[in-house]
Amino acid sequence: MIKERGLLIVLSGPSGVGKGTVRKELFSQPNTNYEYSISMTTRNPREGEVDGVDYFFKTREEFETLIEQGGLLEHAEFVGNYYGTPLAYVNETLDAGRDVFLEIEVQGAAQIRKKAPDALFIFLAPPSLTELKDRLVGRGTETADVIAKRIATASEELEMMSLYDYVVENDEVTNACDRINAIIKAEHCRRERVEKRYLSMLRGE
Ligand SMILES: Nc1ncnc2c1ncn2[C@@H]1O[C@H](COP(=O)(O)OP(=O)(O)OP(=O)(O)O)[C@@H](O)[C@H]1O
Ligand SMILES: Nc1nc2c(ncn2[C@@H]2O[C@H](COP(=O)(O)O)[C@@H](O)[C@H]2O)c(=O)[nH]1
Image (tube, rainbow, N blue to C red; front, side):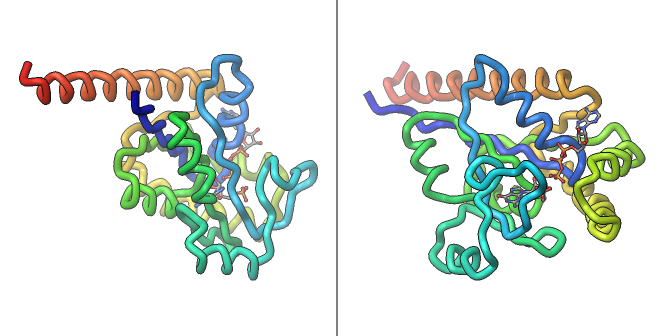
């Protein structure tokens, strides 16, 4: 029997909305049934971040070589740094029938929409703009200058919300996780039904 390809799940949203927090909570749950794709970036590691766990940290030169070699599924420049998804890991994992979870910003998600339209696109939205700013400032990981740039970019990012399959409000982390798990479960059921219907049509039923 041919193994079905896994589902590509894209979680996106403005900087500071809580994508990383929600993703970590999802992956700490015992029945998580998808694999996290570790991104590459040229930004400097934050305190406590580990190469190969949080990101693969690269120089700009290394990153640009990878772009030229076609080694990234998508990439984007965000507030002065490159970010990108290694292509080989995603393909190998999907081919093995496992779901892959990406946590990326909106330009990268738009590139994947073109390359892999059958992926599942979820936009994580803040309860309000004020709350978004408070979270970004409260995290305390960036300088005031970088925070201002990320907040300025957030309005453009929020405009992309309507392009997603689902919008999930991150009011409480546990609520957001429950919603995301329900969406993924429903998407699997939908695909199974479509597949069954298609096969029975092929059999002339
Ligand atoms: N539901 C929530 N309620 C209150 N605070 C939250 C919630 N979700 C996340 N936070 C806090 O908001 C801050 C930003 O969260 P996080 O780093 O996960 O955002 P992000 O979307 O991954 O940001 P970036 O895109 O900049 O990497 C963190 O300090 C986190 O603890
Ligand atoms: N297009 C991509 N965006 C990515 C990727 N990995 C992370 N990100 C997003 O970048 C911003 C900034 O991240 P930070 O760690 O510096 O706060 C944030 O929105 C991330 O989700 C990627 O591979 N491609």
